Amino acid sequence: MSFRYEIRLSGEGGQGLVLAGKILAEAAAIYDDLNATQSQSYGPEARGGASRSEVIISDEDIDYPKAVDIDLLLALTQESVDKYYQDVKEDGVIVVDEDNIKQLPTGPFKVHKVPVIRLARENLGRALVANIVALGVIARISKVVSEDALKKAIEARVPKGTEELNLKAFETGMKAYSEIE
Amino acid sequence: MATSRTRILSGNEACAEGALAAGVRFFGGYPITPSSEIAEELSRKLPRHGGIFIQMEDEIASIGSVIGASIAGSKAMTATSGPGFSLMQENIGYACMAEIPCVIVNVMRGGPSTGLPTMPSQGDVMQARWGTHGDHPIIALAPFSVRETFDLTIRAFNLTEAFRIPVVLLLDEIIGHVNEKLTFPDPEEIRVVERKSGRKINGQDYLPYRVTESGVPPMVSFGEGARYHITGLAHDETGFPTNDPEKIDQLLRRLNSKLDAHRDEIVEVEYSNMDDAEIGLVAYGSTARSARYAVRSAREKGIAAGLIRPRTLWPFADREIGAYADQVKAWIVPEMNLGQIATQVECASRFSRPVHRINRVDGNPINPVDILKKIEDLV
Image (tube, rainbow over all chains, first blue to last red; front, side, top):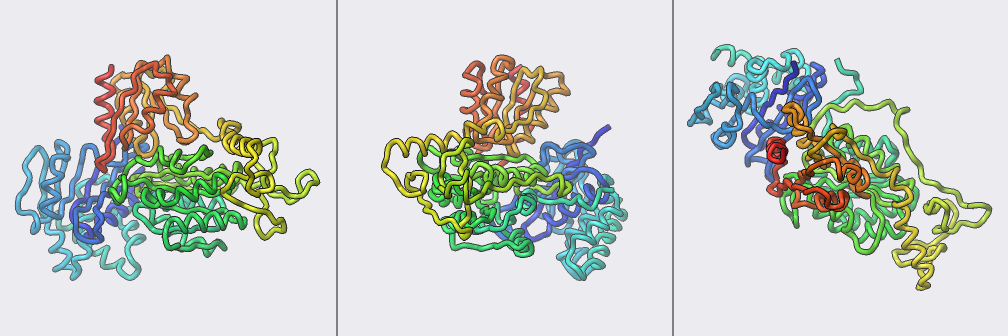
């Protein structure tokens, strides 16, 4: 039975969502030998403004590289969750940043609150690695990409010298999800 | 585990890699979203391949530098998007008239004018064909994946060097920026065409625009010893301007006949599920991926839908589409413009069946669900 798994990472420009999407795609396509596409939608701003990054993972050729029916939505801002929750399919999952999202969406999907930005800032000392914390959460929820592949992809993609910090961020995300489960 | 030749790349990065594999040695350009990664990659890599990268002051100068580099013997290219492509049009005409090989990449974004810098569109399809004035030959290719962008960039160089016709590589923002798996072919598997040179042709001294059987005059680079004149004015075999009606007529007809004579070599089309198709889709670039998704879904529901995907947009695949004019009951042409290729499909199918349009010009891709709905409506 073939599968197609759709992930949308949404928030603001500058939150590293495009990089997180690329790491997911690389983990799936290079290290787990599946097929994956990553695409993005962003405004003309370098920072701020709505940003979204989409990853499609499948064991088949991927025709349409954008999300049609979202399995997993990550939303780091209220604006992004308001805009996208309706695209999530039945039984899909929404992960929201606990501090930034005050109003939770309701519907036939599961919503998890994880303080990804606070965890990055307080536990790791760098808000910048919130995207990698989020990847840890996504790894535990989606289970389509192996944790091992994600670690390899993170090591290969993040700036030299920050590998350890980023791997710690990934572990932090995985642990945070295990605790709320 | 994938091999080491497999990487995740964007379409723009694959374009730069394809150009290097084809032997590009000159890039002159001016950065513009969503094409800038092509320039960025080549600015890093071209010098290491013994090539030259120049960021020019604007797009007019960019295409000018590309034409100059090509005349001096380099495989040359530029990359831009709508507004820059508009600025390049006059010099593209010069390259058509003077028969200077060059590759112009246009990563299409929403227009007209500055339009939608970060959003996809297919609004420059007609501009690629008729953007510059006068009857002129041009070739345009439209890849639909990262791997195909690599392949068609090589092909763009091969075609321009073989026929001395400028080639426009039409990407759109989705193909330029999507990241997906690319397994690089063995270098030995890649076919690379070099331009025909030779100072003496059949023992005669070099005439830059000599009429030959193939219609393509051999090209000697500046600096190789032959001195000759190049102009955008109508010219005779020597390259100097002429007002002789007979010679002008001969030139214009020869220039344009290069396309007719080699049409079947240039036009490439991919068919999916067309053998028994009753609903025929025609789509290109990223929209072809929405169309293929819709065709697959329709087939799962037992609907006989099929897809014709022109990889070459110009010259248009009119005969290939026309062959199905009586078989299909209706055509659907989804495009991120207001119907630029749909009219071509009407002509190609001799208006025998209705051509339904699905158009989007709001900066968003065409959702396969919308195409599927149209297919179901027509059954």
